[in-house]
Length: 337
Image (tube, rainbow, N blue to C red; front, side, top):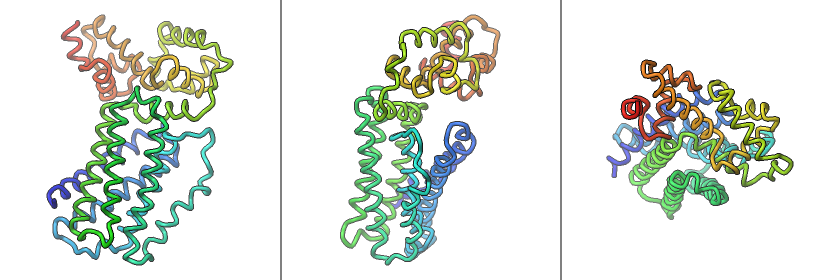
């Protein structure tokens, strides 16, 4: 059991570092500042937990570490930080609630160092269970849209089940011996992060797809006075004739403005009429154009083709091409050039 826990905690530390770097480098233009902060704090809290667990599992510390303020505060911080990070995607609202209105969720984190030792684990995991139930409820509310990301939703649901199972273990009267609890919790965090990474790999646009599905689910339709067929025709013309997809800065809001729609209207239009997220639609347009160029310009480098259709890097081009075509641009050119 210790070996599994060591692997889980070590993997989590590496994963937290990689995700933190990705959040800092790639999230700036797409995530609201408060969401980025919540994501960073969540990764930091998980890193603290796993660093403590790894220290204990390697025999480099004593169980007294589990009663120190950093560990206690990290244990209580995971739930509210995850909620603040995930809520804009799973239950979006037009105007985010004031930060002060949700600040009370950080109160248990501040009180954690002064709680009686026997109350820390039950309270922390009891509160964690409430956040997990919120996540389960939010995923269930999107069940009508899951046909678009069934496999990914199943992986996220499995992560929820794993978390609830850990809650049950943590709330057993008197608890398990510390070494067993440490190994199990380290393993559970590692597995949960692995499931999230697999889901993100299968569907790079998963956050945007979930957000748009949630907007469709929670919001009143904004297409009542929109000529959807005419809007789709204009959208098609902008992509095929004006090649707007080639603009690397093209986004939902800027394209909606060209169509005289709001960003929400365009998102709902693409979701409802084309059955995909806007991010997926844009990637498909760019990949379709890249396919033509790979055939028509055999001497052009793969990178130049990707940049000419709107991708900003070779890695993003390769990821999108492999996701949609099931192969790399180079292999595609060899087979169909």
